[in-house]
Structures are given as C-alpha cells and as structure tokens.
Length: 301
Image (cartoon, rainbow, N blue to C red; front, side, top):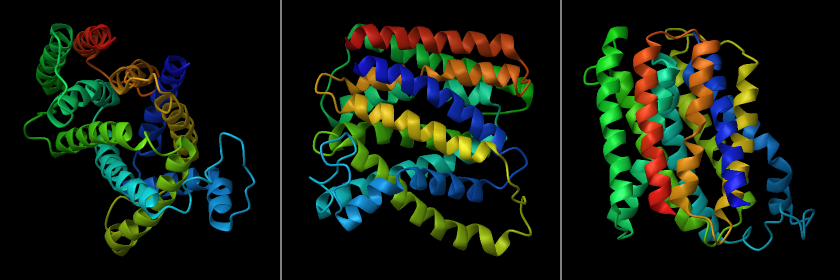
C-alpha cells in the first residue's frame, strides 16, 4: 500500500510543479507562496480547530491527532519541519519562476540521491554498488544539464536563480531525512496540518517584512487560479506521502525516489503547456536521471 501511495504522491507533485510555474508567470513570488500556505491551512483547518478546541471530532479516524496535540515536543518538531520546508519553498519558488521547468524538474529529481548521501553521512548507512551507480549517473546528468542549459543563456555557475534551485533541492532532501525521524512518533495528519499552520504564520511575517514595503517597486502581484491549485495538489501529494511513510515497512529512500518520478509530469507540462525549448538535450539528461533512479531503486530494495 505504501508504494501505491508513493506513486499517487509523485503524480500529484508533477501537477503541483506545473501549477507553481503557471501561478508565478509575471507574478510576485512571496504573496503567491503566502496564499499557498493560506489555502493549505484552510484545507486542514478542521483538524487544527479540533486540536485547539479539544472537540474530538475525528476520534478513531485517520484525522485523529488527540494523542499528540497537547505535546510541546510534538509542536516543536513540526515547527522545525515548517522552517525547513518553507526555506525549500521560498528558494524553489524563486528558482522555478526564472528557470525553465524542464531544467528545474530534472534537478529536483536528484533529491533521492541527496537523501541517500544524507543517510550515509548522518545515519551511518552505506551505499551498495547499485546505489553508487545511481549517484554517479545523477551527478553526470547534472553536469550535462549545465552544458545544455547554456543554449538558453543559463550558466549554472553564474545564474543566481540556479543557486535558488539548488538550495530548494538540498533543503527538500533535508526535509525528507527529517521526515524519516519525526514520522516514527507523530501521526501524518498532525504533521501536515500543523506545519501548514506554522508556515502560514512565518510567511505572513516574511511578506510583511520583505515584500509589502517594496511591493510597488518590484514585480506586481496578480491573482491566478493556478494559486489554489498549488495548495490542492501539494496538500493531496503530502497527504499520500506522510501516510506512506507512516507504514512500518516503508523505506524513505524508495519513497523519496518514487516521488521524484513527478519529473515526468512536470517535464510533459513544460513541453505541452509552457512550450519550452532545447528538448533533445534535456530528454537525454532526464533519461540519465531516470536510469540513475532505477539503480537507486533496485539498490534500496
């Protein structure tokens, strides 16, 4: 069942990335992200209100958070996750706004490799030969991508938005490793509902401090119906993801790998919807990453 949930999450993540790209076209990044966290929080507001008011509306269901709602430690753990995810999102949103999604998607697909390396460094895990092949192929694909992207005047070493994409990808991998830790003691719905709530508060502060005072001098904000779609797709994708990780038999390395299959959806949207260019070289880069993911998958079984 956890594998099915992981594949569902991957599909939804692909549409989430496409929605982000559409919503951010000629649009201010921070208010789009603020509205995303607002809509995501509203989706889980019944669970949050139940925890605050102690009404026990969801006792005995998958939305029951009564066991951990009152724990200060639980909220601190989720608050840390909110900081990690929000850092990843802010960097990733700025990156995907300025870089073609057919480049951002494959780079994001390297997260499972970073999770494997992180597991090796922080949890003492060791990679087998199959996993090492996957790591090497992913590194090679990024090198090739840096060469092909120059045809679109994007230099990986000089383009500041590529740094944002890299930060977003690295922090996303950190989030995956942290999820492995906290999901051992917290319920999926508790984590998802409260980390959205904490993100909303933090994004409100960021917008008031960094965007609102200079809003007339920077890219203006305009409403897009893709904005609520961002919240819907990411909420559904994370719901499937957290429930997959909550299964005792689930492997974070495999779940993380499957979720990066979302690149197939986002890449297709980049071609069909956003009419992006230089596809032959990008398809080769993408194939290398996918082959690397296959090696990681079989090495992690």
